[in-house]
Structure formats: structure tokens, C-alpha cells
Amino acid sequence: LAKTTQPISMDSYEGQEVNITCSHNNIATNDYITWYQQFPSQGPRFIIQGYKTKVTNEVASLFIPADRKSSTLSLPRVSLSDTAVYYCLVGDLMDTGRRALTFGSGTRLQVQP
Amino acid sequence: GAVVSQHPSWVICKSGTSVKIECRSLDFQATTMFWYRQFPKQSLMLMATSNEGSKATYEQGVEKDKFLINHASLTLSTLTVTSAHPEDSSFYICSASLGEIDEQFFGPGTRLTVL
Image (tube, rainbow over all chains, first blue to last red; front, top):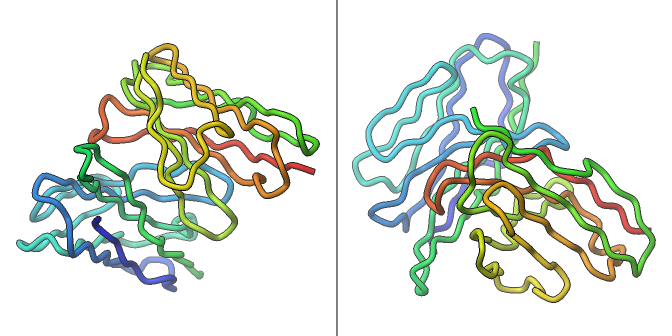
């Protein structure tokens, strides 16, 4: 089973770029990597998804090296409202042929003024 | 983006009673819905995966007779916590997707407190 590892917490200041890395050493060949943001007492919100190299949307960039054993979520110029928990998600192809969904431990980002 | 709703948003019940939580995909048909549980300051843990019209697939350690899942239509899945006990108190979150590997759209969650 793919297992994800993330830093437990990170601190930043408003206006800075924040990079959060997730390790997934046993990711399957056809698995995508997805990042979600979660505020307290709310469901996770989709941020970005990628398979390899680099993906960019209006809120973040996702960098995936060639070996795909890790991925880095990059948040440009964070604001106080970006304070949240960030999860990376990869799919695990189980022996049954079904895909399991493994959330990482999550990284608690605290943005300060 | 796609919208998923949950009802109720919170519920308080007495020990021994059953609680039903609804998950609806409002603007798309969800082939697959997922149920998660999240304890304070912990990550989401997948409880079960349900496909419309078929039995749910439960994760290891999740009692299927205690957590009854029904996915009767492409827009509605229900989770019933039977004979709830205080240790079942948690944040229950559903998500919906077009298939098991597609992007998931999460509901706002339901806070269950069992007294």
C-alpha cells in the first residue's frame, strides 16, 4: 500500500511562498496525486491534481519529479486565510483490484501576519 | 465545481439510538460515494466505498452491521450509525465522484455527538 508522509506542521508569513512536500514511495504506475485543503469542521476542498512534472492552476502549483516518489505543493504568496491543514492523496491499487484512498497525515499550515 | 451536501450538519443523540446521515450530489450523478470518519486533529479515515445499486465495500476494521450504507440512487447515499455509543462521536464526511479514481467532491461533514 502506498503510504504518504508529510511534515506535521509549517509556519509562514503573509506574502511568502510555501512549499509542502509529500512522500509516496510506493505509488502505483497509474495513480494520480491530489492535494486537498481542510479548514476546521469542514470537508476537504480540492486544490490540485497531477500525474507527473508540473501542474499549475489559479491557486497552486504541483511539482512531481520523474520518479514520482514525492510531490510538492507550492502556494504562492500565502495569506492568513490559507491557514489550514493540507493533505496529499494517492490511490492504492489493492490485491482485490479495487483502489483504496489514502490520505496523508496532513500538514498544518499556520500563516502569520 | 460540483456540490455535495450532507444532512444534518450536526446531531446529538443518546447512547443506543441510531442516526442517519444523508449525502447528496446536487449537480452531478455520482457513480461512487465514499464515507470517511475524522477524529479531532487526525486525518480522514476511509470507512467504506459505495457504488450505486450495489453493496458497499468496507475498510478493514469497520463494522458493516454497525455502519449501514445505502446508495440507492446516483445522487444519494446514506450512512446509518446503529446503536451509537460515545466512541462513535466523530466528524463524518462523505465524498462523491464519477468513479473511484476521479476527483472527489467532499461534503461539509456531519458532527455526531453521542451522549
